[in-house]
Length: 277
Image (cartoon, rainbow, N blue to C red; front, side, top):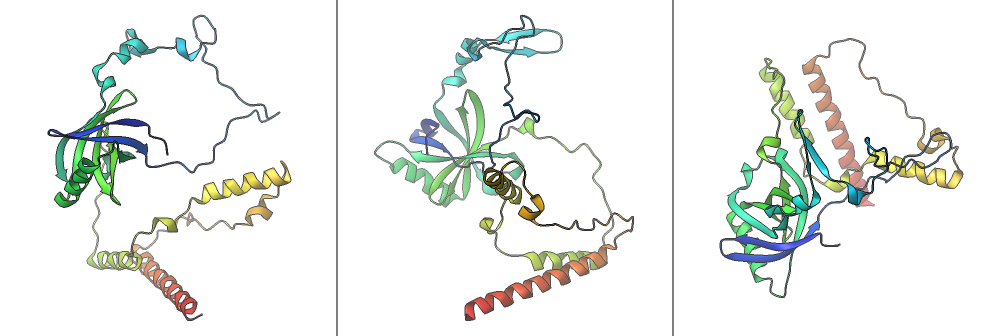
């Protein structure tokens, strides 16, 4: 891992030297665009619409247009903004963990203690654990002032970005209301109970990316023309229920509970056979 930022976490007069590492990565297969006729790579050029010349990135500035006037903001002006020079993760509040809405959560980063003495880092980690609170912080990363939260994960302090309050949108539609019977509510609760278990993220896989990787490997080995049916099998399309019939909610709940119980019983039977073997 390569540190992408270094600075200090500060709360009160206490400073904790840290290095910042990206805690997540994408597993999506990287691809580029090509011409469908001859396979030629598609390249994008930064072309000026005034002089019609291709412009180097070093000669590109940014501009803001309010609809009537446009102003150019140079790289030098941006670099002189005070926030751009900040190397501090400043603790603003310690708040109860349950007050942080999951909708505001953004990218995660690991914080590694920097320097020879990690005592301040350990103190902050234990304080977060003992108080059962999360630290709301402000910091600057890649010239942008950001809001974040510090929490502990497996003895490592994690900085997770938060969206600003004005970045959350309100639903612009009428929230539906409908009468639900007690039987329907009880059956729905039974269905939830039949699905209830501990979350195991490793159980879930990105099927699209796996199939895409299989397709790439097959084409690398066999050439451009491949038999997709032989590679992936003949998948029957399930009935999407688009015949116009209204589904009875209570009956759908009952069938769902029954099917889930059958699957659960079958899974338990397989586990018993594996243990006895």
